[in-house]
Length: 61
Image (cartoon, rainbow, N blue to C red; front, side, top):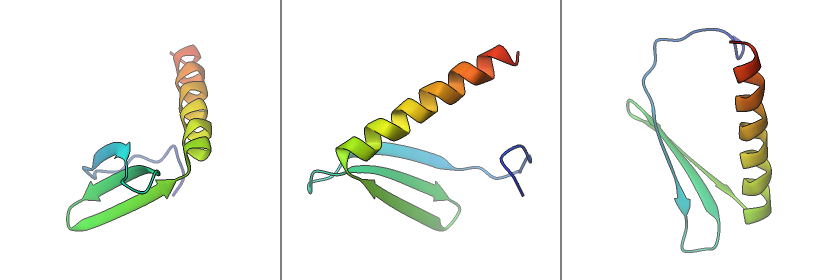
């Protein structure tokens, strides 16, 4: 499966700081929970990638 393959899965995404100074992406899908912690600089890089992907997606409309 790739990024363009559709799936019928519902998930919840929460984003916030941890008490350890990390940025956590917390994904919940059914009974599965995936906590992903990132250093603030890594989180900024991810945010930039998300913004770039959003901009690229807008040009495909």
